[in-house]
Length: 457
Image (cartoon, rainbow, N blue to C red):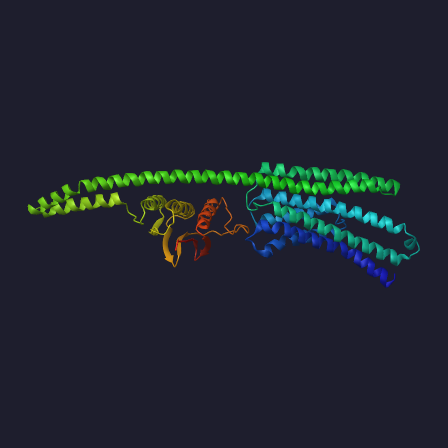
């Protein structure tokens, strides 16, 4: 065996390994946006698991291009995914099926191009007169072209999927998994049928039918497009559901504000009643002191002070609506044995609407109360910094945050972070109304939310 023949033989052994390395990279590209917050190393473990599985199967005699080998590699990657991120298993299954389909549809397109070029080359006068080394070089060149066509098609499909898949952190139900899997199954069934009869025809006749190949390529491209379109339609449905839920939450918040306003009106009625009777109270105290009934006067004064304190409320933030909201959430926290400390003051004369402040307080304090453990504490305070009005809410938090790369907010988790999704989104929407924003952080075992609103100059 000559040196060239030995070289071409080694290249042909390395090409399948290179192809699987590139496919492992493609798998990482697909999965990474759905696993933000877990670090690059853990994401690359997915691609590594796929590649090592394919390498092991290749070493034991399985061709890396077989459906069994690719399926085993993706299954191994799926197991690693589920170990790294133990959430949303349905979504992970769907993404694995999507990658499997993209690999085979891209492989089918590249194979047709491979066969056309190879068939053209072997029927030229030039190649019929060449030696084995030239034939080896031709085989290596066309095999390399096969990989160079297949991988970009997979990456293009992944890019389209990621572009239309907007709600990457949203949980997928089993029904949604079945619905979204339908075009994947249909595409793969069509691929298997076309591929079988094409190979059978080539084996029987030794020739290709260019018109048949053109139709096959068209079918594969349409299959990829259908996968992307169905995902896009699913995301549109999800967007409508999100909008409907946001509207329902907003309607609930408006009802809460109306209830708070009713409580404020009741509070004012109590205060007006006490003020109306204040002259009588003062006259009673004067008579008690005039009659040297000091102890009775002190007791009467103590009762009057308690009545005034109860009517005015325990919290005085400078606005009756925010007073009621803070008092309500304080009582809610105390029922759960959570300490509640408030140094919040309403920005009177700042041009910031009380309704918008109430939306911020309700969402922030609901998140805090629902995610703070017993015997822990919640602290809220506000202050001004130049023309910025700042609201900070912090509560004890022992969990771990996972971030949505698109919104920059923590990803909702039913286990530990119930409510830290729409609430923060609503707060950010109010902050944007005043050219502000929010910041979320974990510091010294506490969940810290900072809201900035710009005041009118």
